Length: 196
Image (cartoon, rainbow, N blue to C red):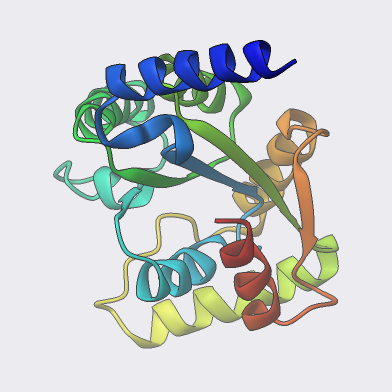
């Protein structure tokens, strides 16, 4: 028994020597927040970015506005190619990553790439009833109309409903679920931060 324990300690020590910074003891993380429009993804990400060090926010929403005369969905494939390239670079630099996702295919590509780098994947679904989300959406559109500098790609209830349906169809049922209609955004943010 003592010989087995000594051998295990030696093997563990050799593995730790092969991995820079003892990464075996502290995996880098990819946090994927899934959720329909107005489920609280952006606010929760902002809260995490204020609280945690060493996180990079890989944002579809930020990238889409880098295209001139952006129209919803116009550069979808290009943006996802850019996101994968950025994620590859960030993983090489060994930073934790936060991203949001609607679509299964793009989410799975991001997760697959992060896994190639040995990242721990934490996937969370932010859930709320459609009625609550649609009220939040109407408020978002009203605020955007009142403030012309506020950029909102989607201003129609039809597109909002379409995105809600896509999320419902393509979400990962195995992901951790937090409800943003029964808990405050602060409570959900704190719970997510506790997982990191």
